[in-house]
Image (cartoon, rainbow, N blue to C red; front, side):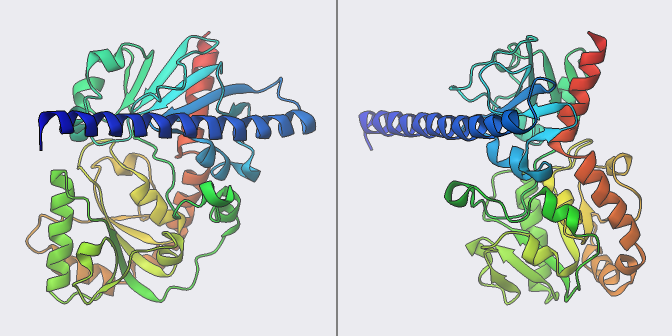
Length: 355
């Protein structure tokens, strides 16, 4: 391929990305405006502080509505919306070029939801990308060890319980209200479930894929979902076309392996599992116990030569049945505290108190 063709393809991809970013912002801005108008008509919005959340190629209207009560985007005194001039502007990973980094308070916060190694690979740790922000919440020790505006923090990744239908229906099936209404564990008919995609970029991806491959080749009894690379194994069922809830909610245990093992780096992989009333068998953040109650998860080291035997012992035990109450406690923490929007609300209120 000639250099000219490569340049043309690159420019075409950049143009396509920009169009997608612009369309996403326009769509979410309109949806957010309609939602705000409804709130203004019913309750008024004068007493709320507004926070806008965006990411490089889209904004967050879908998650704002589906992961707050009654799809309002409101948590206590904070109203989340896609606005041009909010009280605080929050960016996930990288800014959307069509969302101005303006705010009434001058506060512009960045939250890294990628693992430390990937943050560096994507250039998210470069000063030119960080200087524009007044705070940076990150699990990257090279950043938070500097102190100041760099704050050690979990990613608080938004839940991923379903294949997004937002662009088609503007409705999420497994939203906050649905999850809050599920006050008892569903009947379990599967012992162990694993979901894994075809992605194999990071060492953590490769480590996870190798362990799952070893499990399958050992004849381990599990329900395997995900990418097409796994179809050759007898344990494979399908690509999980309806999302995680229908799969996890019927499983006693779910194997949860993070993309990287690092302090603070825990993600929706473990919170999605708990929200579905399943027990995570967990390989990830070594300080996960600072956030979730003991008994709501069980650790495993997949690099241990005996890991498969240990996993079998866990599955055959009644650890899940004995700890349903701890899963219930974890679910309440996730719904009301350990989620992206509650975290931002709490940080904003702490900031507001200092002013």
